[in-house]
Length: 448
Ligand code: ASP
Image (cartoon, protein in one colour):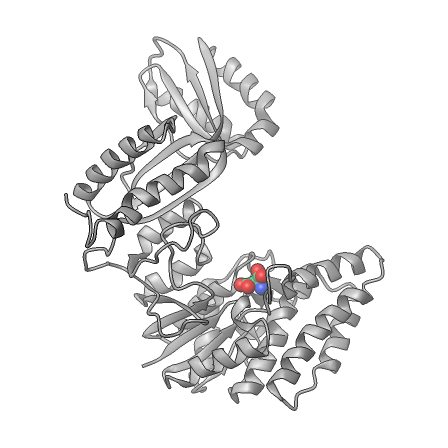
């Protein structure tokens, strides 16, 4: 068995968290390839090392004094090293990093050093060889990620290593310049390493016990789901659920490697397994609730337009030209409604409306603003019908007005639009309808 094991920032925020990570790694000899993030927050008021590094870069680039931030960064790593009792001295490495920043090294270089230094500590602590991600995670000269080249480089480098620590989040371009993925990108590194070593499992250790059915900032102590498919997760992530970086799913999905999301602070819990097919009845009727605020619907009406297709294409082309992404497009023969993110739409509203007017000469244009989208995941059409019926009646009872409905053809049972100000209440009502009721009524209300 080969497991690739990634630890998020909160799992490596201090020496005590490092100890928990080591206990987890050594508890199973299959855990051979370790991907650390940079130290995260030690408490809610703390700052992640990556954020300190971005600040340090910004101050240095602006010619301002960055010594106080440098001291905080040095302090974070020294605290970990001392707490672990390691005979490791990273001061020369850190001197070099801050000198490089003063000599014009870029923002990505600065941000990447959080993982780099944590990787050196993890390697010393575990006694596993350190592999610099710059050697094996490859981008082209324009900063585009090179998937195949990375796979080959990782295979070659890790092929001869029985164990290794590979820092997450960054790689390099052909001239050696460091390039990072977007925020949260250590998840992607973990996935790429898992694919390259043909891992049996990609374990992703974080500070929650798996994929939670709803956002814990909105619902108190939400339950987690046992098994979810890559596709279900992808749909929910697209609608705002966050557990893994979206781009982390593709490499392992392609290779058929399951991802197990687990909790460093509660390692006995099994967490959530993400696989290509769930293969079992879900433990709950719904597979997740996710959502995002800040949407609006733009509706354009023109009676008697000959070609619906042309009508639709014209509106979509204008939006595409103005770089406004569309969420969904309910259309009738003489009108089209497009759901778009409100902020970018408002920035381009005049350009869009004038183009729509001159291209289509519409009878009317309506804008329904301040919408929030809420997606509810559910498996199978039977479950979907039941979910839809229950969502409608629960929201009506709570006097929450549904302003748009999209009954998905995907792995989401449905996506509804409600007023932005009803967003949190909507999620709580839906959660309570499907989850709290299950517990209140005993075994389950999951009867179709
Ligand atoms: N440290 C980086 C961040 O804070 C990457 C990661 O944690 O995955 O975004």
